[in-house]
Length: 236
Ligand code: URA
Image (cartoon, rainbow, N blue to C red; front, side, top):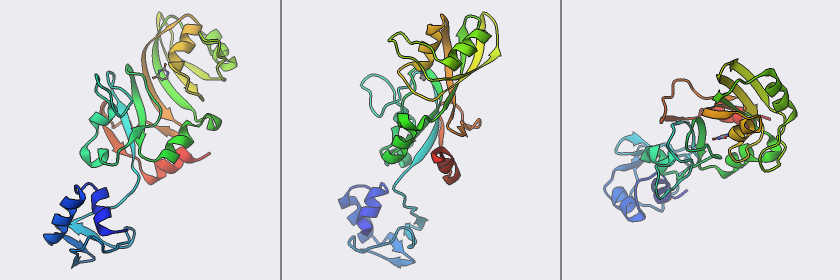
């Protein structure tokens, strides 16, 4: 890869900025000053530094965010803050986008990436990647609801849901539950509870596939996934 392209991709500005930076002598490859943008480097083999700081090249970025309420799962919105607004420039420069959507008032585990294939693999309806939610629900959730969700319920538009696993964590006028579904219809969890005459009051996604939201992540914060976590998500 050309040196000027690598630096531009890594957020060191426009081609003009990169040219200036290189002319200034701030860029080294394997300890040698490189001033010409057309010089080729192998990002996996060569050590590139800018003013002594190593530049670690990567083409893709994978983030786990603990989405707060009030923020939209989109890259742009004319009125509201988006999840991308919560991301530092050093990550936003990869132009990532959310993998699927959580409602504005839903919290929890959101994946953000610029890898279209990764996103597609997780979102594809054929793969049935399970997603787990914890919710508080107005109304007493009972064993019959567990059975109904296991069989599938009919949503307001006539859609029959696939078998889902409902666990009652606390039973009462306000119940607490955990629900795992393998599909992602619009407002699915809220509509499943409407189908059994109950109302979701708060909703948080805690798990995608085999990966649980890092409990260390405060609401509104995020971190990069490890290579192992990416592998875990893509494992069949
Ligand atoms: N189901 C919902 O109703 N809302 C979400 O944000 C996710 C799943």
